[in-house]
Image (cartoon, rainbow, N blue to C red; front, side, top):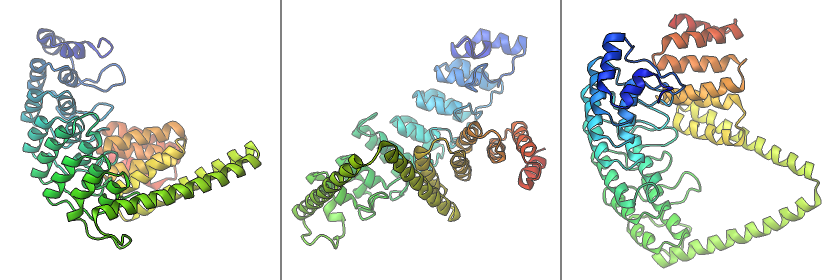
Amino acid sequence: MECFGPLHEAAGKGRLETCKYLVEQIGFDINVDANNDSGMTPLACAVSHGKSIAAKYLLDKGANPDKQDNKGFTPLHYATKEGKDRLVRLLLSKGASVDVFSCEGTPLHVAASYGKAGIMQILLQHNADPNRVSADLGTPMAAVLCVASGRISESAALKCMKLLVKAGADLNCTNPDTPLVMATSKYLSECVEYLLEVGADANIPSNHGHMAPIEIAAKSGRKKLVEILFPFTSPIQSMSNWNVEGIIAHARLRHSENKGKQSDKGSRVRLKLNAEKGNHERGQDKGGDKDKKTELNLLGAKAVERKDYAAASKFYSEAIKVDPADAMLYSNRSLCHLKSGEAYAALLDANACIRLRADWPKGHYRKGAALMSLKRCKEACHAFLTGGELDPANVEIRQAFWYVF
């Protein structure tokens, strides 16, 4: 931690007397950023290393509990991720904001992603929003289900889910999919049973593939899940034999038909590829990628028009996977993050945009807007000034500069 700075090192190692000397005798800024690119404060260093006495001292001396580092993390995010209940309570008692967004969502998203049920309970008791949507993670409920039977056990996930439901979590939020679709897709039978018990709708299909949970279960041959979902699912018209065995048989038939079609198609494609030259093949691939990117960009724009910024962000993210060198996509997603209340994520995308096209005024405008939302006005002013120098006739940038100036 030496590269962080003297006060950061002392705080991170819990050296209280050294902290007192540096702050009270030498006059160190208690909220100073680290010397490296992390943006961490001495308080963040103390918290991330579990040094509660040093953290309390810094807070008592006026350390800002809500200052974000370059990942968007506040000290509360670090305390949550490290599972430090005592530090979570300390920070909240000192007025730490409970719903600040970072690259990993709010502290509640972080607690959910790491199965920290005890800390989730503390955060929810302090009015953390169980329905805040992160463009990358969805809701805290979705964050739990994403890591269930992976980073955390199904039983740990279920414990977290119950806390969220008790706090008023939306059981049918479709971002990125309903909890029931996600639980079924991961074969989490206990979670599926619980969600149905508390009123989740078994008839809402997945966003990709438009399959009801029971179809997802049947397609994977999970008879137990089909049996659990069956009493809660309305008959599907395309299935003539509406019972557990009939549903599974229908899914197997569809799978067999699709596999046959894919095999035939694959054979035709291989014959075609063998007849074409390599350069032509690569040209075709690029053309296909271009079409896909254009389509995703259009879907994102339409989602922005209807103010569905979470959905738009998903489309732009998929487009970025196709072409990660397109600065405009990062600019568009930056706007979506900002409109969704994720100012730090907006800043990350704005910086990515600038790295790709430093001479494009829009990237600097996006950066300024994100910095304004983060209340980093001096930096926002510089960003708007840079954008204005690149395009002196741009009224939008000029107005933003004078507003912050």
